[in-house]
Image 1 (spheres, rainbow, N blue to C red):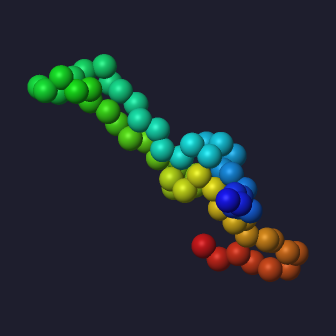
Image 2 (cartoon, rainbow, N blue to C red; image 1 turned 180 degrees about the vertical axis):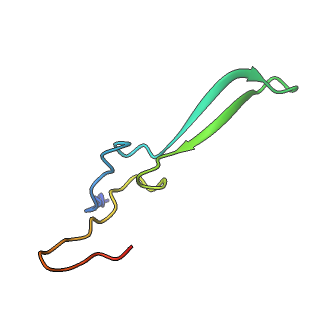
Length: 63
């Protein structure tokens, strides 16, 4: 089967790993670990770079 390769560039901040799980070292009553999920602040958990707006001389960018 052909492999589809995404043409969207990977996020440079997280290198394509947008969500990570971090353990705190403590445990729940059932013995499982307490885990926090952290999402990349730049790509909002997509793993891909967001399009950068093109700035041209003479044009103003409104926020």
